Length: 401
Image (cartoon, rainbow, N blue to C red; front, side, top):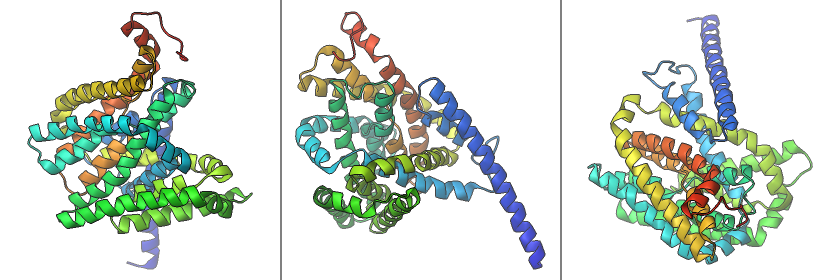
């Protein structure tokens, strides 16, 4: 083939990819607008879009699927980096000290997923994966809900956020263990991954508490361009190195986010947020892009049952944590219902499992499970005030109560 024909073929493929990507972005824009209109998380809509774009679907991607795959990886990294930005090191250490009892109680939410996988005959590895899926709430969805509903100042909100902080730190240890297990590592190798994960988390948090301000000052600039490159360079570099040593790229990005503080932290949130939203959408789309839609049917019933069971258990956890903090019945109900939503971490866990050949039913069940709780969780949170009033047999309480 001559150089002219090669260039023509490459140009044709590039044009097809641009058309597909443009169409995907238009769909994402519409879905995000619909979600915002009804006050819901866009995650369920992105998952449904991925089902419509995978192999065997009505509108399969062909020319741009490689790009979507790479974008999905960047989406995980930016999601967890942005999550790390939410926490200052001193605040993080303080929350850990005061919230350990609630965090320990929250571990009971690992049980429904673990037990469900065993009952379905999927084996211990799939049980470990599904336990993580049901354990962790969606920090991103819940934090956004609290902001959008104006509830960050509520009495119960610090308790909710403290539970989420503990979960995020547990994930920093859980993900390296999961990566070692799904890769078929020996017990010794997995043990080393656990110790390495714990050591890295502790060292980074301590160093961030002591030197975070200096690091942030070194990276700070009046130029948005300089700040953006100064942030993304270390984020991708450390995420990649973390992946190479078996810790998890997302955990590495999360720890970089924790290390940033002061003015740089706020600039990073403003500059990275659009990129996070773009690549996070690609991540959620790519997850269901890999799932055979027909497998969703066979896992729908167990997923709904698991959502009801684990959602109720998570609500009980929030109730107990708020009660321990000394809050009244209304605040306890609001705390419990707010913690129900699942989202990005559950998909990250299942995505690691699917990519490494764990039972494909795990991915399908997780997709159904997250669809149910990513929709019902925000709805229950939005109407938690009248629900609290009904359950406590009182008029709808004020949010400050």
